[in-house]
Image (tube, rainbow, N blue to C red; front, top):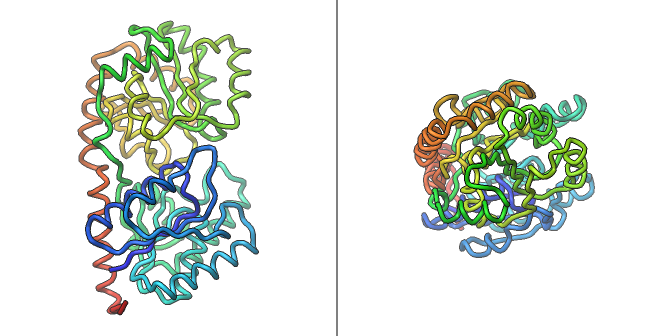
Length: 391
């Protein structure tokens, strides 16, 4: 069986890491795999070199870009269609909204027997103007007619898609986004190294975020909660892991609040450094206003770091109140303060949440398990089409 994955760009990000690990797992299982992406990278960094090492055929389609451009989008659809006609894959599996819309159209035009689309996060969401949400929802409904099966990384994505009229519930299956779980574990050495670099003492309570310094990642809510949280728990320090265009703006606001010295900003870090940095935290705070199933939450729990998260999208499926962390109503600053103070005050509670979180995530988020489940899905879908492709 020949599987072709298509994604808009191979930046360092959750959907991209998922896609590369999927291709790696399918190659290891003996499938012929092609990975197609557009040329764009970004400040997050690139996964092209990682993709080149996994043993699949890697192709770059120049007009496949993130920004909406009727001319580029038409050219990308035409080029993808010609590629599919030439390589004749048994399955085309698309990821991200742009590659999903353009790639599924091209695959249908080329007569690909099985077309799968992964929902890592809805293309339309609560952070967008109503007109944009309406347009994206309309496009998704149209693309759904060309889709054999949807793969959701969280049940919440299925619920939102069904509510939006994209497709009936029986067209969806949830397969958790896999990651290299062996890379994440507690390390006293990594903890001490990070905290020295950050300038925090062992008895400080470090509340960390792992997210770009960008709108909708929740930093405004975090800063709104900080003064009261620090007043009630003076041991609190904050570490923001990630870079982004709003760094200067956030620094200025922290200065005005008199809290700049309590926040260490690491800037952009390499994926290989994520596990080490998570070891330095006592609590992970995930305040994003829009996410599929946040990988940062899973990575923290794998490192036995408990999580406080807003209760939106897929987060409640891994942040179980009193079991793996605490959930806060979206945008509720008062409840956010209470949760921070509660966890900061109880080290034993934090350790128990982290222990249970690691166990739960080990069972659900292994990348090989993800690849096995996807391979099984492809076989079932291919058997139903009754089409045998001769290569």
